Image 1 (cartoon, rainbow over the protein chains, first blue to last red):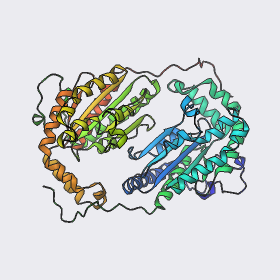
Image 2: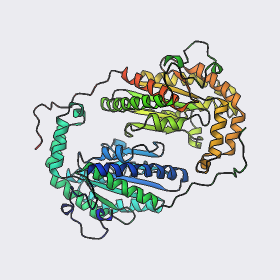
Image 3: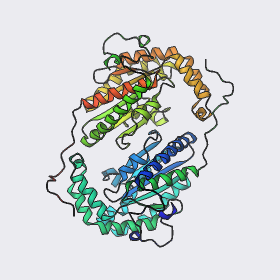
Image 4: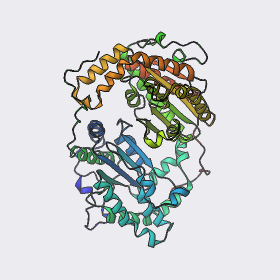
Length: 267
Length: 267
C-alpha cells in the first residue's frame, strides 16, 4: 500500500493521484468485497488482541471532501469490531469553550488510551482546511498550525500512539453524482444542506488546502495515505489492508494472567 | 416480552425466574439465530432513523453476574449499527475525582444525547450491588440510593430519554461452566483473575442484592427486564425484540430538509 503514501519530504501533487485507481488488485468489485470480508475477520481478531494486550494506542484520522465516504469507511471497514475498544470521535463546529482554547485542546481529550482504537471523523486538520478556505482565522495563525500539528502528533507517537491518516480522494465528478443521489433520495435529505453546494464551488481551494496539508504533515510517525475513493470497495480495501498490516506489524500477544492459573478449578 | 418485566409495585422473586427459559419461541438455536439476524436488520434501520431524527435519547443498561454475557450482547445485538450513534460506556473502579462526587456524577456525564443510543456496560447499579455486598459504604448510605436512582432516571426520562434495563440472568451452574471455559482457553486468561472466584463465593449475597435492586428500581419510565441468559441466542433474541419494539413504538420519521430542495440541481 506504499504507493498511496505521501512520502515525507518528497514532491507531492494531489492532482497526480488518480481517484479511480485500483492499483495492482486483480479482480473487480466482487473479488474486492470478498477480500474485505477476509481482512475484516483479521481486523476483528487483531483488535481484540490490541485491547487485551493494552500496550498500543491507535489513532485513525479520516478526512475527505463532502460525500468522500468517511461514514462508509467507519461502517464497513470496522464492521463487527468490539465497540468497547473502538470509538469514533466527530468534530463539529467548535463550542465557545473549545474556541477559548488552542485548536488541539478538544482533540487531545479524545485521543486513544492503551488498547484503544479511536477513529477521527474529521479532525484537527479542519483547522487548516475549512478554516483556511473561509479565512476564519488570519493566515498568520493557520500557517503556523502545520508545524504545531506535527509537534502534537509527535508527542502522541512518542507516547505509544500509532497514527494512520487517510484522505479519501474522490473526483469532482464523483462528488456531483453522490450529491445528486442524496437529493434524489428523500431519506437522505436530512443530511443535505444548500450550503453543501456552496462548499462544492470552492472545490479548487479545498484541493489546494488539502495538497498543502498532506505535504506538510505527512511524517514518518504519522503518515498520510491518499486513498483512491471513487470506487467504494477499493477505498475500503486499501484502508483495511493498511490497518491489518499495521496491527500485524506490532507483534502483539495475549498478556499473561495476573496470577498463575495452573490447576485452578471453579467450584 | 412483557413476561420478563419486573412489574413496578408487584411481588418479585429472582429465584422464580428461570435462566433456562425460552418462552413461547418455537424453534431452537438455529431458528433463534435467524430471527436475531432479521431483528438486527430492523435495528440498524431504526438506529439510523433515530440518529437522523435526533429527537429521542436511548439508554440501555446491562447488568449481570460475571460471565453473564454483557460483552456478547454488545457485540451481537448491536452488530453493524453505526458507531457514530451508538456508544458504550463502561464503569470501572471509580477514580479519586469520581469518588469525590456523588455516585451519579460520572454516570450523568455519559448519558445519551439526542439521536444517540448509549449502552452502559455495568452502571450506577454497581453502587447498590458490589458496593453493598462488600460494604464499601455503610448501609445508611447505599440504602438511600434506590430512591436516588429512581429520581435520577425520572429526570432523564422526563427530558426525552427512553431507558431500558436488562439483567442477564444466568444460573450458578452456568457461571461455573463459563468460568471453567475461560480457564481452559489461554487467550482468555488476561480477563481472568482469582478474584473472580472469590466473587463467585458471594453468589447468594449478589442474588439478594440484585433482587432488591430490581424490585425497588423497576419503574414505568425505566423498567427492568430479567433476561433468561443461560442460552446466549435466547438472551440476544429477547433483548433484540425489546429494542426493536421500543424503537418502532416511537413512530419516528426522517426530518424535513433544512431548506426546500425541490428542483435543486448539483452543478
